[in-house]
Amino acid sequence: MGKIRILIADDHAIVRHGLRQIVADAEEFEVAGEAQDGVECMQKLRQDVFDLLMLDVSMPIRNGIDTLKLVRKEFPRLPVLVLSMHPEDQYAIRALKAGASGYLTKQSAPEQLVTALRQVASGKKFISPSLALELADAITKDTDKPPHEQLSDREYQTLCMIASGKTLSNIAEELNLSVKTVSVYRTRLLEKMGLKNNAELTHYAMKQGLVE
Image 1 (cartoon, rainbow, N blue to C red):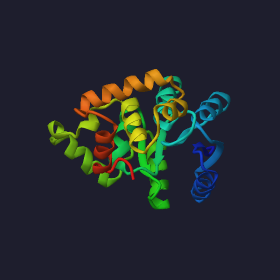
Image 2 (image 1 turned 90 degrees about the vertical axis):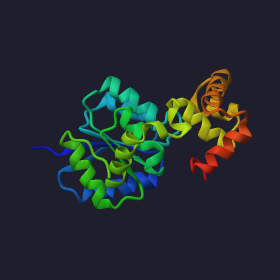
Image 3 (image 1 turned 180 degrees about the horizontal axis):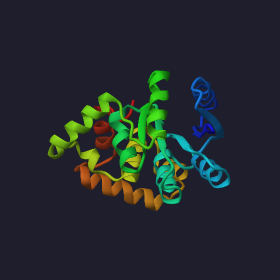
Image 4 (image 1 turned 45 degrees about the vertical axis):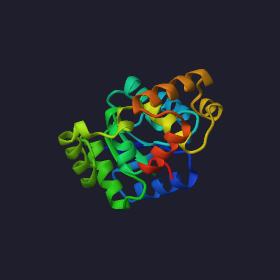
């Protein structure tokens, strides 16, 4: 039986190298390809055959969540393990809703990564015990959800980027959108959250721990 072929998509070469080392210690896996952004990730998937995708959330050109949605359309059966430096409470549920097979923070131990890969490769979902508790809480406390959890993925991205000091032009360039479109997202998210301006938005994001 052949090894499980993995594609690693992450914009940091050091992270990719580290992941490759961890995977090398598990005999059933092999890293068969690497991509440094979402566009290259899709190109590699179309050119070669992989059994599993390890996908970073924060990548240039096309971020992980947008890439994940594309992967689900073109390769619906491909297991995807999302890795992120962001805490679980910020992106895990969004990633799972977008079709991820599992979510793991980059602070996790190497052994947990191998466990996650084995579980996802076998067709099961992987979530950490802490995320399982959070999901259980979310089900029982659905009515108490904070305002930012009602935002679409694009609105949420816009919120975080404005709060971290980026202009609408910066955001438009990074997300490959027009300034007008980003402005619409900003208007929508302010309405949904009952906020008046960028200052209130930034204060909210910092209070919620959405930006550092």
